[in-house]
Length: 220
Ligand SMILES: C[S@@+](CC[C@H](N)C(=O)[O-])C[C@H]1O[C@@H](n2cnc3c(N)ncnc32)[C@H](O)[C@@H]1O
Image 1 (cartoon, helix red, strand yellow):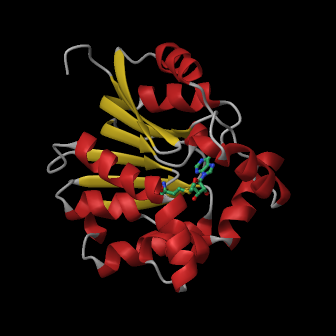
Image 2 (tube, rainbow, N blue to C red):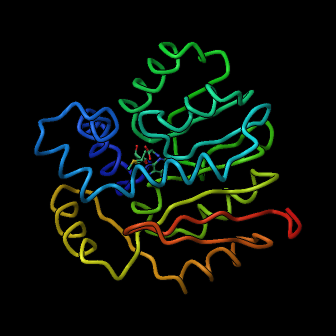
């Protein structure tokens, strides 16, 4: 792992509980209010992803930057036959394993530590997702191209919008914690999706994010 990835990994390894608390709401009232008011798009992107992943039952999913497994385990609970989650942060993956056990879907789930660019899957997946991942990727094209290479139906990704009030605040706050963040314009995403080899894509503005679904085939 290069220095940049190691710095990212260290950041995520030490912020596992804080990150997962955004979903569990195990916070004080004020912090829950902050999440509901300023981070509502994190909940909306979950709904977007589930809706755009259908049909889920019987299909195989790859979750890149799976974090604490909120998406991966949900796919398995909704009937996905195989779900692989990869993440650079070992502490995140520990939570994924526990969550899959607790939800009785461990036999359908596999979690592995690593970077997508170094990952060589045995077979392709129907759907690949990268949610809250591209915020932290300096060079998005190789990652998006690899996602395209390992998928047979579609890729679902979220990217933080460039022109928002939150972008400079996040940029400075996370840079100070050793976690650089990157932002995307509509034009940048258009070029990335085409260069990565998706036949077509659709894109929705959700709060301070872009939610994007790229299709392998023009007719899907
Ligand atoms: C904001 S969290 C999102 C987690 C999850 N996708 C979600 O939305 O709940 C970003 C995750 O991406 C992981 N990550 C960052 N860069 C990565 C990379 N190059 N390869 C794999 N995982 C990465 C981090 O370790 C972290 O767990």
